[in-house]
Each structure stands twice: as C-alpha cells, then as structure tokens.
Image (tube, rainbow, N blue to C red):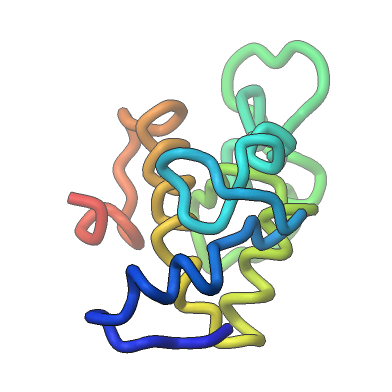
Amino acid sequence: MIRFPLRLAPLAELLYPRQCVECQGPPGDGYRYLCWECVSRLILLRSPMCTRCGEPVEGRVDGEFVCHLCVDADRCFTRARSVARFDGVVRTLVHTLKYESGTWLVHDLARLLAAGWATHYHEEAFDGIRAWID
C-alpha cells in the first residue's frame, strides 16, 4: 500500500483508486476498502449460541446453553462474542491488519464491529470495547 501525505490524498485517489481488499472491486458506500458483494458474504453470528464462548448452536435452544467445549474448560473469560465468523473477508481484513500493517482497514473493521454490536448485542455490557465505542 502506498502512503501519501494527507494534502495529496485527493490526487492519490485519482492515480491509485481504492479497491476492495478481498476482490479488488470498487468499495461500497460507507466502506473504504470493502465492496458490498464482499460485505454481503460475511457470515454474521446470531443466537442461539453458547452463553460462554459465543459459538453458534444449530437448532432450538431454550434458556442458557453452554457448549461441550466450555463445560469442562477453565476459561479466562466469562463471556465472549463475535460479530462475524473468522473466515473469508473477515480473515483477509484481520490478517492484512496484523501481518501487513494494514492500519488503513481500521475504519472498515470498526464499522463492522459497531454495526454488529448495535444490531445483536446492544443490551449487553462489554468490558473490552464499550469505552472505545462510546
């Protein structure tokens, strides 16, 4: 990724237009490096899920459910949640951020996290991200 001083950013956009990090298509409105097609392929996590680790559960679950991995495990957390499955587009975003210093992706990752939180978890309290989003 080529980095330009902020004052040259509009010129850089003309010379090097942004592309979707996954498919190299044009980015969708509201996203800087993701197209709508790739966003639509995200595997969003929804209830029912394990009360502890947040792993989705198939079928009907009445009340709280703890999966077989969490029943006997000594976890260092009481509850974990994810917005989307770590696969495909999300995997590309996180790996680019971590291993290629892809800080330009932070806006798109934060947008996905905030949208997922507002949609699925807005009533739950989060220790790790609550202060950052507020």
